[in-house]
Amino acid sequence: MYQTPVTTTSLSMSVLPSLSVDDSSSALLASQRFVSEACLEFLIMETVDTMFRTTLDAETDREAVFYKLEMLGYRVGQSLVERLTKDRPRFVDTLDVVKFVCKDLWTIAFKKQIDNLKTNHRGVFVLQDNNFRWFMRMSTETGAQDSAKKAAPYLWFPCGLIRGALANLGVVSVVIAETHIPNQNRKGISHQDSVSIVEL
Amino acid sequence: MGSSFYLVIVGSRDDPVYEADLGPSSKAPPVPEGTKKEESKHLNQFIIHSALDIVEEVQWNTTATYLKVVDKFNEFLISAFVSAGNTKFMLLHDTKSEDSIKTFFHEVHELYLKVLMNPFYEVNHPITNTHFDSKVRLIAKRLL
View (cartoon, each protein chain N blue to C red):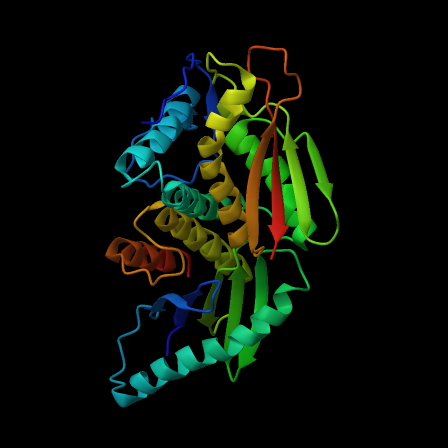
């Protein structure tokens, strides 16, 4: 049975570019729409938990859970990116697409930009986020090393999200995520997460 | 024949997503066309599909989303709009009114985004939503 990490609630909002509203909607809906960040975090946590609970043989078949979460993220990423690029000009090449993912997509989904982007110019990009927002409040009693391992399934959905976003912008890729702990002495979580994108 | 328009939405894998015959916007009484109209329907689809190649060529030259008139066939003009996810919106028309067509494309694109938000809609599948259809016709009536 998978353990849900303990989190503290926060009250902050994230903004998505709003689509135009029909004439039939009320004036209230016509104003900017916000999503409560606490709700989003809880929903994402619960999604992972539900997948583990509803998959047969979840302990032995982590692949199935991975597949489900990733495909979920893929579909979300596809639509999200179509909506986010609504009014901006189209992209020139892969590097442009990856830069868009680093800046705009990361800002919308995680409220900050990527801290470090590396590439080997042969199709592999490494995106590094020093403070992954969805993990900020996760912790376990056994310390940083163990919580990094336990947090891995929570990364599968963001991986799918990025893969779907890239795919819809024309870049077929494989997205792998890793967590590193920079400082082993601290008790809290200060993750250094990096996402590697391998272009197929 | 009054000004007629024919809209086609093609997905990123070149699969047809939606097509609509947005008929004449003028209030002239319909001429009993019979077989002539059916022929022109087939022809419209054919013209738009042949213009797809040209759209794919032109889209690499510019980063703008609205590609103006990409092709001309006899008296018909074809305008195109490409979204970032490579979904092509193409309109066959015989009058030249760039601004209204640009606005039309933007509004249809927003409608398309709303369809995308539906989790039950798979990307690049045909849109069978009647609500979408009636909205598109409304926009066409208003702008074209």
